[in-house]
Length: 368
Image (cartoon, rainbow, N blue to C red; front, side, top):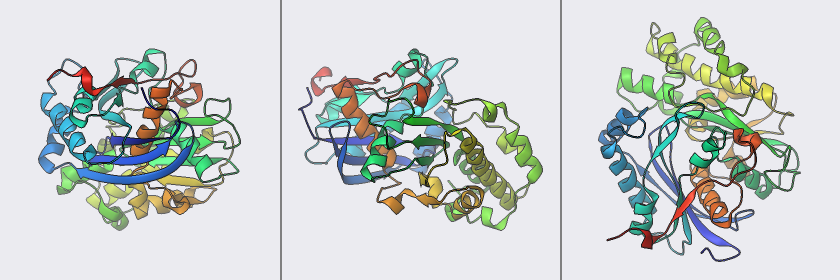
């Protein structure tokens, strides 16, 4: 059992951009954030990333043992050596996500991590939400609500995570609990870094468009952008979520363009998807706080700033860590799982009622 009151939670996240594992500490009781602690990043090697990329889109029953071993070993390496930890939150690696069809699939065994780390591990955060009719994503919004209170926001604020897929959380910090009606609205905006990364890898052998250097030399092809924005996803009422490869035809839309124009157009598509998302929020936020790798792309940030009617800032502007925010989120959610508190609700995933997902494995649960 988790001790009462404040605890030290360690969270980990490996996103669909397949760059590596983030690990970060927070102090929380599962409702209030009391402070942030140390963090660590463990990058995937090129060979590891190749194996993981080959496993994307595969469902339970497929042979993903090599990918699973990479994910588990990398997380164990990233999570070892932190002092004073009471519980670990382990998201695993998403390979496929189809909540209206086959469900959601994350690889990584929390029981193995519990044994290797000697700590209780909360994991499998998404399955219960999907089983009860939710999208299973995004799951960071309850943590974003706590972050809005931690930064002492007085008016609505929005958190935009630009990872492989983009997602947004609109928060009314005046509400008392995240599951309260009107406190949150969250959903996936559309593709973010994943198609840009795939383009860079396929054409230039690079994992990403570092600092937007390639896109900066190009121009957005308006015809391709218009075709992209015709996708029915943008007309669906949220909550809603995406798989990493839901917009895989984006690459086809820029196939005839040179490298610079293709990168600029894909970046423009990701920014335009966010602009479309803003049409769904209940009220204009005081500011849009950007987290994830996309905030480090100056071209992406310039496009967002030009398009939005509110200030656009990296989360560092309010004292948060954009590299570690998702890892911190799963540390926070781990405590909520242990305390039986909700981790999602109708306005974040579309689940029928507020629900607590996840399961907890203990070190003693694995036989030697």
